[in-house]
Length: 131
Image 1 (cartoon, rainbow, N blue to C red):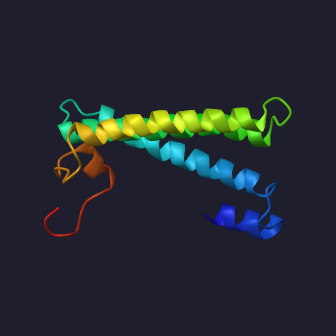
Image 2 (image 1 turned 90 degrees about the vertical axis):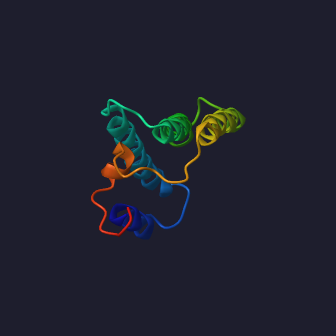
């Protein structure tokens, strides 16, 4: 967050100054999603709600993975792709990831995750009563 604030203060809120801020945010977000998926895959027994969360995390990974391609072509390789092509790739990948994420929500629902799952353990010990 500090890097993003420094870039925005230094370059202003312009199209060119957002190039590195968006890149750092994408790297951070992809790291978190891959970390959550790896925590899930370390378990031997999987609860149905964890399978639903895996589909949702897979949808996020797919969406932001294709956004990285659009990001590279939008900011760094400008002359190769047309703006219509970039938006077409972005919108099609969004529709696909919405379908994958929705199937995860429809699989079992996300009412309450049991406390012994990898997703719950990944956020550290809970100090609140009842979790």
